[in-house]
Length: 447
Image (cartoon, rainbow, N blue to C red):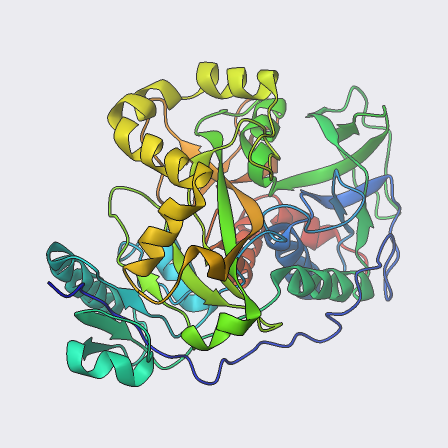
């Protein structure tokens, strides 16, 4: 029986070039409006693409505000932003009317290929097609078996979905560009600032030239403190920890899943023209092992999805006992393990044995052999998990509770397609902030 395949050649690949994207060296202080590095109207925690996009949107929309970004690392966009496939997602995967669907489609129009390799996957493929139409993904079309090889010469399959737009980009460079725009507009970025406390200040004597109080104290691991009126957290792998630090609800908990990539050897690059995706398993928010051309001409194959035993464990044998105990005790991970034990074991098995991943790739392109691939990079996905062990599929944004209350907004679950959706997310955050505490702030601004 022929495998059921869907693929589409993305020829040529449309690359996204961001202005100023080649400038990784940043950092404190902006261009038009300088602000104190000890007090801000708004502090954004997290220097990944979502945090930087939000900072950029806020300061461009409200140039009179003093806005600061704090990042725990010595540079920006080092984690999820800097360890992904670089695809600009179309929005076809996501449940209609969900935040993921709305914000992803708003964020970008794309080309995708979806491969079905088993007969029972055809209804799922057709459901994806209908979902894409509902989500407003432009110019989708079904590709029948006889037309597949016209798009991808070496790919085998029964049916595919194609759409006429795609984007491949270096999201880390996009994040640098967001940061540059933010600084040129007067924003400040404080690196090497690991947040260890968010609380109401013991005294409110700190005042700006506008005569406004800064009641929230954001403290770092070195004992330094900055003051602000409002906090937005975009902390990725640490979003639950940061929420808990602020006295807010720690749920949903974040569980780190590592995704390992293989790299196709350059001399075998002719096997793949564009993006080739499998039909995803609807039980999980992971997209499955796929073929992804990169800007520099390489082709990534993957990723898998395995629990990593360290929050920032980018290597297969990275381990931190405290991290894994925290995952097991604080989340519904045990329930997840019992619910999907065989899936988890199979993913671990494929991660350890290169030949098993290659067998999966051969369902789509039979010509690929184990000698054609090398082990490549890896990323860690910050996946939210509820107390019952269910993987949280949609983005999660919520306000604060307790004493800090409505002075904080948390971006709680923003894995893929968060990079694609980052500008749409930033607009939503700006609107939410404006409707809450920014209203009195804006009235008191002195321009």
